[in-house]
Image (cartoon, rainbow, N blue to C red; front, side, top):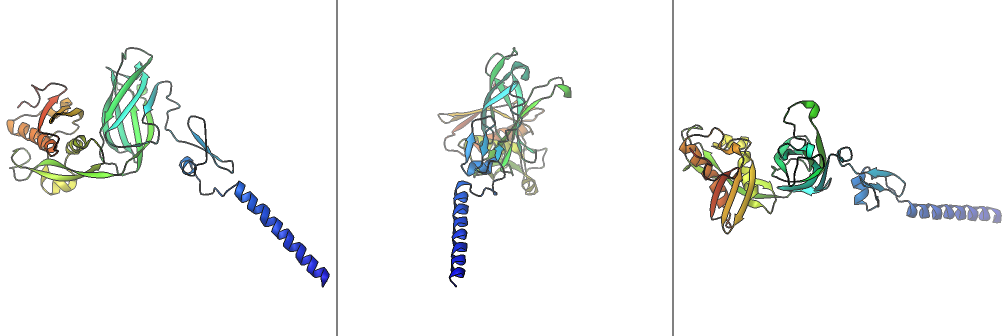
Length: 312
């Protein structure tokens, strides 16, 4: 009987010792099976290695490297300082960096904002802030408006300007980003079916349509961007349309002492004729901006020209 009790006691002691060491191991190496990528590792606050791209190491020795697009491969051609890869952005997004002079043509190059299905939600132009006639690095800046993406993540695509159109000279920098999903409601003004038809515009028949847009401190610019996007399929079914051409871009928008000065690219007045249509375009812009209490009047220009902007 004593021998059996001693054997049982010995077994219990061995089991207790086993559990003790198992507990110590679990404290040293927590279970990390749920970590499958860099973001998971970052969120778990594990060690970030000093490298570029950044890398994160789990306690069990696995290393996850941050996806930063093709920045490493293009680093000797173009570098973006702001925003950083995977940073959350909202509209308008400000982009700052430097690129070799050969990346530019006439001191600029195109930029696109894409959602994760490669759908373009915004386009714009980056412009050099120095002499681009060089092979050295030249600083550039861009402010890009984009529509509300359907995805949480997407990409900034900075394209080498290629006036030749020859595909062998194409190049691009791709940077992954995430989108601020918060929204706000603004009004835009469209023409209505109360007029005789889409070819007969009358600015007296404009009505407001509520639009959900990405939340932004630049509310006037966000509303104007929604206006330029044009009526949705539902808006068209409800009898709304616009006199404004597609692919119109905002070059700049400032509001000072109640005066909103907005400058567009040449597409605003491309093949626009007739006083009724011109007046409708003006009023769509005016009324969309005048909804804000900080705006008392609006000055419209095209590529800096106020006098010739929207002449019938």
